Length: 118
Image 1 (tube, helix red, strand yellow):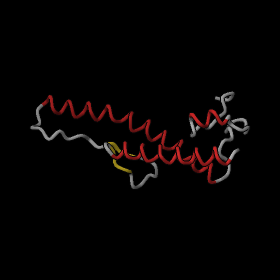
Image 2: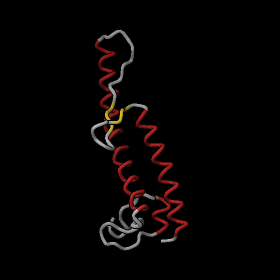
Image 3: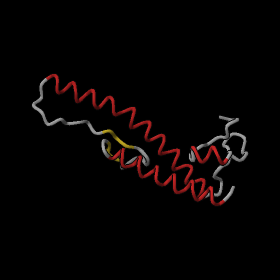
Image 4: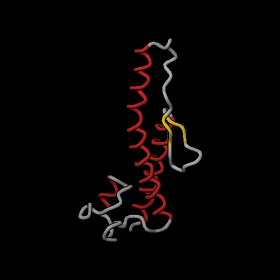
């Protein structure tokens, strides 16, 4: 794998990681007991609690849960790709062990598999 491609991927991955962590921090807290896990905060609209306000808070919380989960999974993939860069295994398909097409990595630097195995 070309070092220029790896360096570019590393920079892109680190930027994506920062963006996702910032997005998660807007509505979730890091779980101190479980690495890479976040806990969605229950929203508080600071309104007098009537049934409608309570329902809106519950709805907002329920809507945030799948977003949190999706961002956590994306962050796991990014961290794995960064780990692979450090271990000199970046760009290898996890299924067939062949090199992933650099164009695929340019579009999706956290790709785990080549196009054939995807």
